[in-house]
Length: 284
Image 1 (cartoon, rainbow, N blue to C red):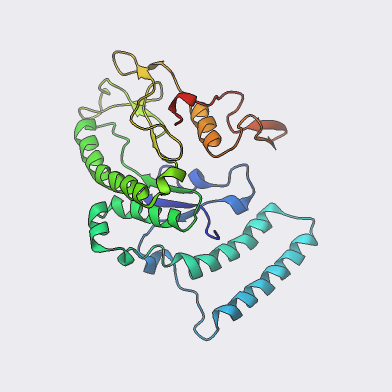
Image 2 (cartoon, rainbow, N blue to C red):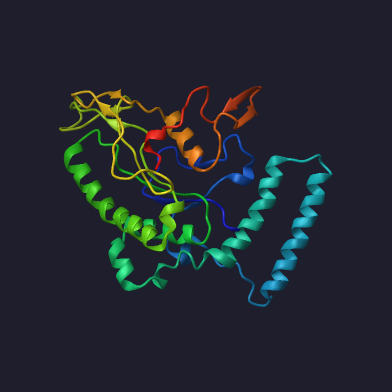
C-alpha cells in the first residue's frame, strides 16, 4: 500500500528516465526505477543499527513536519512536495520493499519456472503486485531490429516466452489475474519489407499496423481483434488507436476517460486527447 509504482529495467531504454516521469502530474506520482534486481544493490540499507524502527519513524515524522512548515510558508510548491514525498518513499522502500526484491525467498521450483534473466523481472513484478503495488512496468529492450530481424526476434521471443507464461500462470494460480491487467506492447511494429542498407534482413519502424496483447483484469481471452492488410503493413479492420487502448484500460479501472480532463499549458487536455473510445468487443 505504501510502495510507489515501479519500473523494472531489463536492458537499456531509449530516452531513459523521461519515459517514466510524472509528466503533467505532480512530482509525487513519478515511478521508482529499479535497474538492478539484486536486493543488495537495488536498495542500499540506510537503517541505523543504533536506533529502533519506531524511533527512526518518529525522526522522519519530525523531519516531514518541518518540511511541511517550510513548504506552507512559501505558498506550496509541487517540486518541494515531491522532494518531501521522496523521503517517505525511501523509508518505506527500506522497511517494506527489501524483502520484495529478495527472490531467494521463492521456492526453487518457482524460480525454475520463470527461468531467470528476464524471468526474474517478471517474478519481481508478481511479488510487487502481491504486496499491493498498483502499477508495475517491465522494460525489455533490444527489439529495434533494423538488421537481422529474423534471427534477433527469434532469440528475443525465446527469452520472454517462458517467463511471460510463468507470470500469467502464477497470477491465475493466486487469483490475482482477475484483478490485474497485463499489457504487452511496444510503441510500434516492424515493416513486412526489408530495410535497405540494414546489413541484411532488417525491418524499419511501422506504426500503421502492429499488435499488442492483453490478459486478465476483465479482458476477454482466446480472441483476436482487428486485422492488417494482406501484406501485414497497415491495420484495415477494427483499427484500434492508442487512445482507444488507453480509453479501454481506464474503463477497466473504473474511470470514464471522457471525464478525466486536466488543465495544462493553458488549455484543457484529456488523456485520450479528443479521440478514443472503449473497445467493448475485447471486454469479458
